[in-house]
Length: 355
Image 1: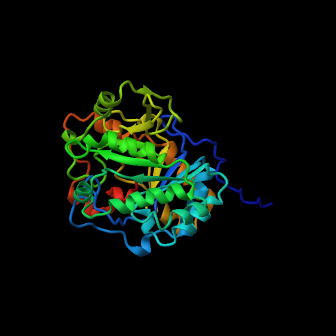
Image 2 (image 1 turned 90 degrees about the horizontal axis):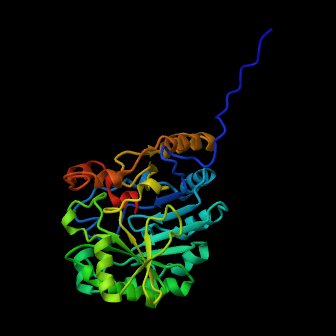
Image 3 (image 1 turned 90 degrees about the vertical axis):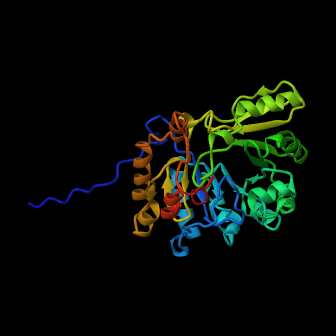
């Protein structure tokens, strides 16, 4: 008597999926393009770059499918990044697709703001819940020096358009570099207060294409607070909105709140719940990671959702990444990736893996 073959299935996944340090998979940064219309000194300081091939870029339907799978594993916060994400044609269509995913608690976007004025309303109408605009200086000459083009009026117009479109939780990201813009802390903070936006000061980080980074250029969180206290008096440290939030939040006496992301001097690796998906589908488990998981290859091979979910869960369960802590512990700390490595592998670039 012949016996029927045994039926094998993937084991049921236990949620939440935790890594080796007990960190859940909750936040996904999705870079939709490696192209950018600025050349900021802390991200893209070199004259030439290697770009991803157009045919390798994920289609919107593929991004939505991967986000759906990630959300089944516990991801409820998706941020669209780049490069400059507003350079991706028809981005509102992708946002509409992602907004239909009821598991997502937040769907946000980080932009340099140059193209925001013309797209803010359509992004809001499509279902985007939050916008973060990068703004590193209020001086046109410094903007030009940093980004290698003019554009400050366009960025400010984009911020105003986002407010008119109804984005209630607008944030401004500012990378602070010693010798460049540390004297603008107060001006940027007051602009944020006047606009109803919360400023996030970011320590200069040695990630991706920061080929001219040095520790001497890092203006630390402690130095930022000391500078602001001299101007505004005592500053109150606030309880975190979430345990895994990258920014430590503070409040001035007049009620103005702001945050500082201090990954260089005060890493938050032990609470980090975020990963990154490059425009061509490489999944990176840490901002400092050299390698990732090629989810595009798995997806385009015809693998089903259960198989892709099992691949993601297995990789996350084995995750030990704590890149910022390891970098902080180095006795001699230089750039993360030399130029020759970046030219051989564009996935190492920040404009590819997303901020």
